Amino acid sequence: MKKHPFAACICVLLVSVMCFSSCMKIKITLPEGNKGNTPVPAPTENNDTVPTLSTPVEQENTTVEVSSSENSGETTTAPSQAKTPLEMSKTELLEFFNNNLNGIKENMPAFKREKLTTVSDIKLSNQLANTLVGFVKGALLSEEVETKNATKGSSCTEIMSPDGERYVSNLLYEDIKSINVTVEGTNYVVTVEMPEAENPTKSTGSYAKIFNFITVDDVVNTYAPKVGATVERNNIAVKYSGSYAKATFSPDGKVVAYDTYVKCVMSLKDASVKKGITINTDVEITLVSTTNYTNFSY
Image (tube, rainbow, N blue to C red; front, side, top):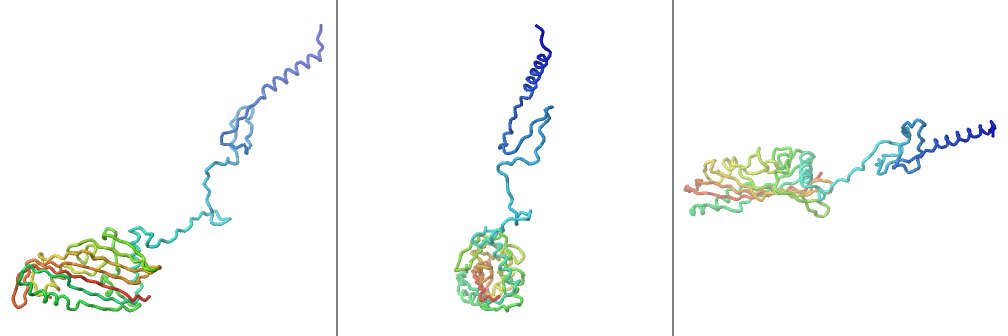
């Protein structure tokens, strides 16, 4: 039986449609990070790489910077609150202590200074020399009680210790034994304890950074002559222990009161003490100097 030409055309057309449909079956897999909200374009017929999206896919854990204002692109950090002395580290507390004490010589307030030096102990190795104890004590106490006043607006470098220096405390953390703070009412009391020291000088050592104190030179030039003693320089030792400085600060950092306590033992070995007769003896004299600064007016 002869096929009709039109039927043959229909068959060819159907076969072509089936083949084209088979070729167009495409499976599209979304990227793992895509939530399905961003359209992904289909690949081109020649399997080119999918072009980069103009809008980036939102990532989790994105850091968001808060701008200082609605229209500003600058980021800001909230200022930290100023620490109180109770919140400070030991080094920060010492810096607070130094800076605010040094403000006295810079700002020159009015204040009152009272200094008292006492002989707390005298030891003489020669029993005969013990008759000189009263004389030695009296000689050392003469002219050692002092009261001075600083005038507001006037230099106080010769009144506030250390005398002649532009600072009141120039201590570093390694110079001190300890530092602590307590509260009295609304004020803060900072106490700095000093380590033991032997033969410090005016130019070296931690004591020169905060105190007026006795040196070997002072013993040779002042204290030995006062008690009528002659002694070789290398037989003199000045030892310090238990010394401290204590400052009371108002909440705004101004000094309300300041106290220093300095204790030393002057040792004179093989000294010749002359009082009517000459007696050879070892001498140990313990001196305590307490200085109080009060009545501050800014």
